[in-house]
Amino acid sequence: MTSMQSTDTAAPSAGLPAPALLPSLVKPGKRYRISDAVFEQLSESIRNLQLPPGMPISEPGIATWLQVSRSPVREAFTRLVDLGLITVVPQVGSHIAPISLHEVEEAVFIRSALETRAFQRAIATGQPDTTEIQRLATANRAAAEAKDADAFFDTDEQLHANVFILAGMPRLWDLVRGTKVQLDRLRRLNLASALAAPELLDEHQDIVDALRNRDEQAGLEVINRHASRILVTVEKHRAENPSYFAP
Image (cartoon, rainbow, N blue to C red):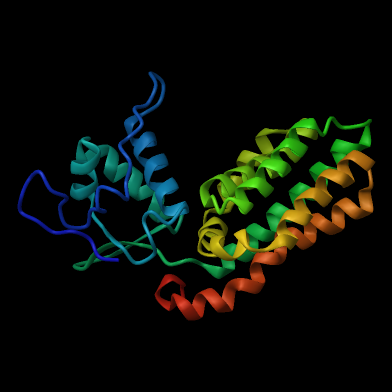
């Protein structure tokens, strides 16, 4: 995908995504800096592939589109570079960084380790209330049947977050989510296949059933299997989109 170029001030400038790709900036609250809002906007757009790997991106272009000054954009870019989500080549410019498979594997490890521990905690002291997580599993299946990719992805995220809620440690999901931008980019690439994969839906229900039955062995097995399933898709997506992946 290439950026749009124009000398018309009303149009996107070089290094700027097409208007349909980048939503308007969500204005921050009183205690939230503009640079934080820009960072969140850009990191989420990178996470969900609205800004795909390899796409040119520039500070003035983003500042123009989001209608903010260059300073908060520069701060956001610095944070994104530090996270490995933007690459800067002197005399060439900035681009959305490729997907790091090493970081994908790290994220799978972290997610699996923390979610299995949360599962153990959720069933340790009593019968967890599975009403909400069952609702999410049902909604996730309905989204898959309707081929609603966004709803499928969102209910998948909410379902796994609910395991941490049941463990009484909801903020740990924020930690997990912060480590898995690279993983989520791969998951987005795989979304069409995931919608047609009944085993994913079955595993979500198996997690719910294991919580309801307080079955530790079944829960740990399905969470570990479910978390690592995405890794088998790597070669397929690297063959289809070689420029999206780091060497």
